[in-house]
Amino acid sequence: MKIQIFPMDDRFWDIAKKIRNGSTAIEETKRTFIDFWFTNAIERIIKVEKEIISSELSKDLFTKAKYYGFSDKI
Image 1 (cartoon, rainbow, N blue to C red):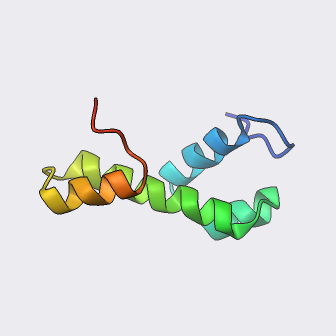
Image 2: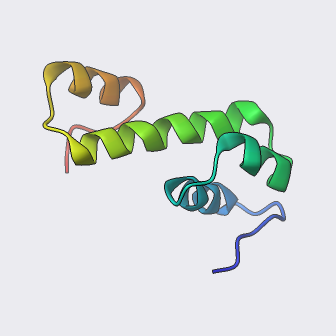
């Protein structure tokens, strides 16, 4: 899969895929020149996503997921 580095509206989805597959926010900032603030935000969202997938949804995890913008619908 070729990952876009040119400014396109779906580039953030490509960055999320890379982070899901082991890349880091710092690596993605260096690769794409997108500000670390954005790549770090994507990385934090992916970490919460993985936590939701791998854990039982407790009240604390639900609150954390809502804070990061996750919907309460499947």
